[in-house]
Image (cartoon, rainbow, N blue to C red):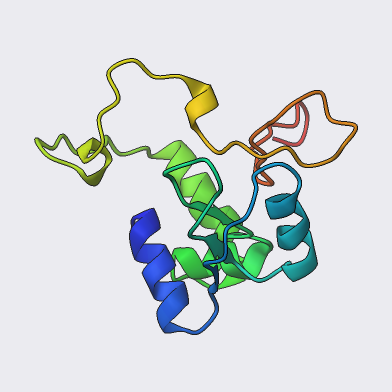
Amino acid sequence: MSLRGYLKKLDRQGKLVKVSAPISSEYEIAGVLKKLEPSPVLFENVKNYGFRVAGNLFPGKAAFAGYFDIPTSEIIPRLRQAIDHPTPCPIVEEAPCQEVVISDPDLDDLPILRHCSGDGGRYISSGIFIAHHPVLG
C-alpha cells in the first residue's frame, strides 16, 4: 500500500486528524504531534512550504501491523520472512513520486521539523529501526 493509500485508509476509518490551519515547521508541528499522539495527523497548510506533513503514522505495533493487514503477532515472522526471502521491486515507467520533479533539489525547501529549542537544527525522525544482535540474531 502506498503512503497516499494509507492516509486515505486512516481517513476513511476516522483515525486521521487533519489540521488545515497554517502551522509552522519550527516547533509547532512537533508540539501538536506530541499533544495528539498516538493519533495520526496530516498538516495540510505548512507555513512557507508547498508540502504537507504527516506524523504519528506508526505510533505502535498495532498501527504498524494494521498497515500490512496482519495481526501484531505476525510482525516479527513477516519481517524475518522478508529478510530471508527479499523480492525485487517492480520496475515501472510512471509513478506518483514523479508527479513533482525538482531539477535542483535543496533540503531547505522541505518542511523538515525543528522539534525542540535545544536542537542543533531541523531533523527527520523515525521510530522504526531494524537491528541485528550479534548473538541472538
